[in-house]
Image 1 (cartoon, one colour):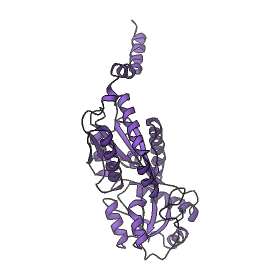
Image 2: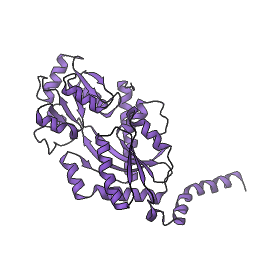
Image 3: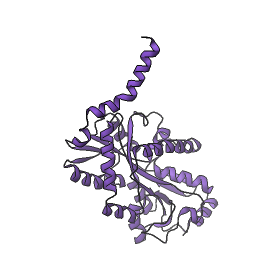
Image 4: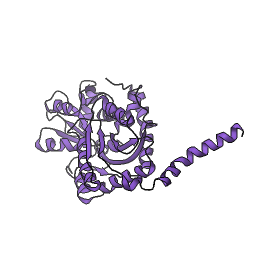
Length: 328
């Protein structure tokens, strides 16, 4: 047999092997899970990602009759926990929650200990949520256009907080500056919690944060909301316009959250994970809860989520290169 023939047979086996394996194990999806599932959340407990994972994991545990253990492994903008997931067996018993920073990190961190494209398989995108542009009440502005005018008069004097260089809040602010034609100074913190505390204490002037933790502070007067970064206003704060309608036309930015599994996961188990997680997202009480907070529930296919990740890696890569963002 010639080399070309052997190569053709080998390539054919690579294509057919997953299907043959699935046919030989028709009970995989039905038997899964036969033991507890670990859900790694590479962010600190108490944040939006942690809340989301715990909320969904409870419903999955009820459906599966197995515990779903949320494992918080915060650090390095999610890279520590992501690396742990990349090195886990691809058997469905370890899954990973990621935010849109997953698509940003390859550009911000040039030497990641994992390959974001080769080491993971997309399961489903859970949600998409806009940011809210909030300022300290002492700042003498009441709209996005007024803030832009003030920033143009005082270039570099105003500042904004974020959960660290290269995080989604930082990226959103950089995009805002680029589109508004202004310059404000970045003050990075170790996570979003101290960044928000600094804003409420008046240490900084501005931040972009997801609405859920800040809505209560806006309603109490501790923060002032100038705009939301989605296509429409929030039901919880109908008087707050979108940034696009309030002074920066075309501006839209947000944060998605999704589920990945280690690369090589058997297709039947991947399909089962996708099916069951999407079913939880479609539950009326869960859907209504998220919609009230301005969150879009997604629940897409592995292929659709993978396409979003690829597209965002390209988009954020261009922005990072243009702005020179680097990790702290």
